[in-house]
Length: 375
Image 1 (cartoon, rainbow, N blue to C red):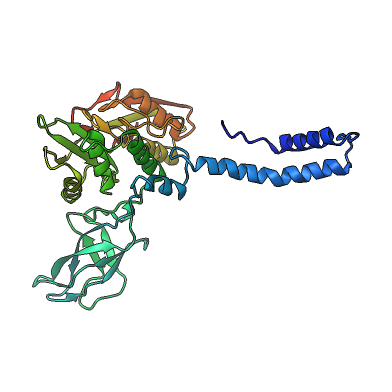
Image 2 (image 1 turned 60 degrees about the vertical axis):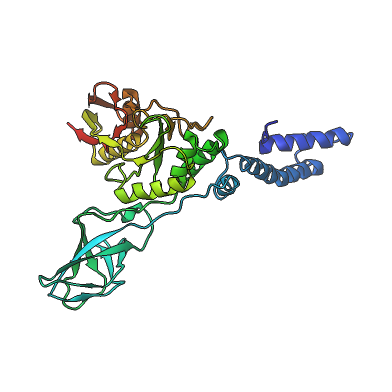
């Protein structure tokens, strides 16, 4: 039976009706009647408790629970929330020959928002150059920086230039703490697909439990009978493809959980370019354009790759909330693009120049971060 919360007005009416039924002669229509005042006071006291009961009822189910109760519910199935990780990678210093850079040297972004510390001592070579690994002091995807990004020393180091540059590999590996929506999805997937000793659902669960990918898909029989491969995406501003280190981390985790028989591997998908061209946008402002770009990027990050048989947005569905609707793998429908554009801002008019039809992606392919242009 559903817990239907009556309105405060309905509670007041119910209390007055109960008093009237038990006190012959009581007239609830009298504005200053003591019993009427008592009824209103009791209704006001009971109403918050009924609202609390309604909220508590939602925490009993994974579909409606809120953090931290969501964590507790999925924790009963051994599913912890994936913690945020810090980005790391090479940083190049310049200065005088043989100048030392101590381990733990702190750098920061030009705007001062994030700091990074070196993980080892460094002595510049005879040309006055050297590289050492640095790690962001704040866990999260914001610490991922592209190659060539300039950082500055927080404290001056003798004979070392005041700025350093992120190396060719970039700073990578930073991920945000898992969202409630993602954790809810994994919890529902675990309930709807209980462990079976190596099913497609198991491989999906192991890949996501590794804490590395933001999305994952399973390809049973991809390399023949007895094989079961996993593809992962690590969605960042640069795109969805994982680094070799991230692939190796998931492979190690899956290998520790998977059956001793059979063949399995974690492989890298191919990201196909996706171009979206919009003309005659009205109103046409920088803010609206930015909102549309963000919406289209978010949309592309929901499309499952072609050929996937199990995984995010393929086999997990939240009834009612529709947070993770089932989608056809490898297809970005034109109406989804229109919906993303129209949902980004209040528009009077626009023309979608490209794509002109639904976009399909081959097996093992998914969309890259879309290139959006306004004409």
